[in-house]
Image 1: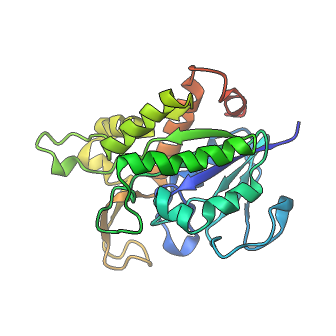
Image 2 (image 1 turned 30 degrees about the vertical axis):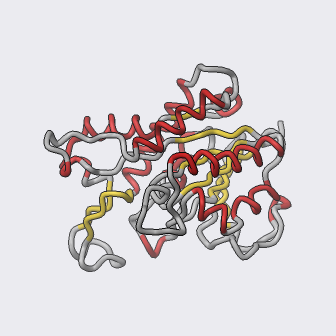
Length: 264
């Protein structure tokens, strides 16, 4: 059977990272580990592999393709991008050149879309729908299946009176859920799943998942770090596992059955 590809479009919480910035890890970097017989990972680095074509100006060094027994995962997420800036930089155009019938486009945006201080990134929830529709339409035009993924929860427990974690960017999550019904699309509510999971590990336990680093523990972070948005490998692994679980339990229709069949 010919392999299909899951394309990932998103931000820094999804993207793949190279060794020099260890231990930061996006969930898209670990997703392949939940599928049958992962064989290898292939860094695009400008090659014309699998007919993807030459790198364009909007490509980037972190772009990695992971190969499993039955599919490819092409992680094209990029740090600092929103649904708007990812589109404005031509990254969706690049996806359109590669994506084909039978493929999937998983998209997770919101962390940067909600940032009012960055005009080039910010979109209102209404504009968020308008931009996401561009991704959805590209996927459909190419015969691929669009899949909405709500943004992972941030480590926000210290900012709430009861010390509980909550869904991050709720207006944007609500918009994705609404779009799922409106356009008959699969929505994987990773935002809720990760918030619920963080409530089981607690405030201290969550530090091992996010970029809370002791001074001198990593060469790239000599002064340590306290980052409540980005994940270490353990967090990325756990969150990718939650996404795999959402795929496995998806029963609204048969649109994810082909992906389900490849889960380990």
